[in-house]
Image (spheres, rainbow, N blue to C red):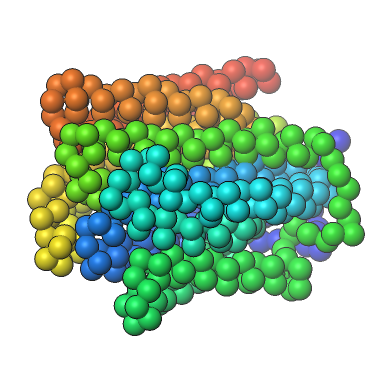
Length: 468
């Protein structure tokens, strides 16, 4: 028999009350701090690109080639974090606080072990990696940038695991504070290190590492010194539990593979772009994709909230809440996507001007506007796929989420991009439309799969389908 995690004030927090309360309210309460945090993070990435743009299109392309590899590191942290959020939330939903504590301790140890294994090879082999990825004449610049950010792997992975623990207990506000601090610090350091200190592209890399290291110190303070979180990270209470590791990895491993998949697709698209339009097309794609990621922040925020709320509901065996969360979050997300498309279409020339202000990058303005306007057809179809994947992650079915993303990215996006760009001869624009078509088909497939899964859960308990 499980206990009610909200039964006594001494054993709960505001976040846990939200997590186990009204699902619709929980989605909003947990999503908005994440949206604010990710807006700041994305603003930093845009500002970072704008400062790097002053170094010329080669520097932009170099960061673009380093991006997919760095995404692997981020993906490991965020992917494992999805497993941690899901496992912690499900245990809180079931009233198992000690189990949530132990899962969190295992996650921190995993972050340290993974960082130790990856850091040295990535730093040493940075330039050969970028040569292999087709960076060509900008491989040296990419290696200069990449070796530094790869050296900060431990901070990248640990901070994402710590954020995940906080999300799992419903404390997205503290996550917002930490991510916001990292972004603001990075924006301050960028011009100082790139131009004032004369470090060039290496300055952008050092700004990233220093800011994430500073936030990691803050997270350590909250967990190990202030100790006012719901989940405890007391080392003396650690007890190795194979099931806890398996529970993290059941969601975390496939979620990490999803980021590896995204990085792989980016590499494939970069190769196609180099073949049909040269490295300038890579600069357009990687720069424009920063704006795409900025535009879908509300959807990502909704998705992270859904993992926590769905996980708690699943742990408490409140399946009707899961169906409500899926429908509500998807509907809200589609509305946001439509509004985003309209705004992006109107502002595309002004957005492009942010990245093409220097004589060295001015020639990228027109293709960047074309990319941004094509992506307006992409945004409304992101929520059905993203929210559905979050439902599966929240219930511990990480491999189902992975399979749906394989369909979307490799089967649909990569294939359509290849066909339209090379077979039909549309060039770079064929890649843009391949992304759009792949996302539309993949999003619809994921949504249908999730609705079928939720209906089956309700049927197991003999409950009627939810009308919301």
